[in-house]
Image (cartoon, rainbow, N blue to C red; front, side):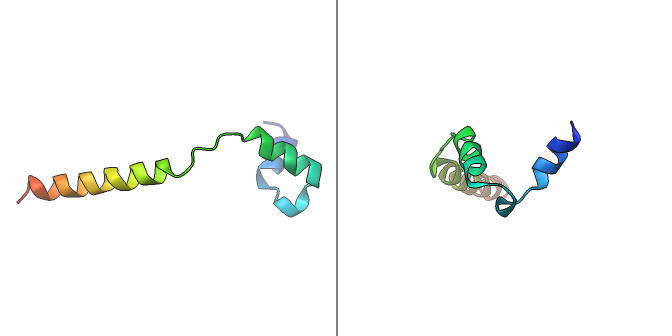
Length: 56
């Protein structure tokens, strides 16, 4: 990891120019929507239910 990469990890949005920000946003093109949160909530509810279903 170069010194520039270390600095890039701690840069705030105010520290970069608008074109650089847009390029960074385009590079992060994954948009999963809300399903990870819904899946996580359902999985947590299932695990919560299972922990009480088998322990009495």
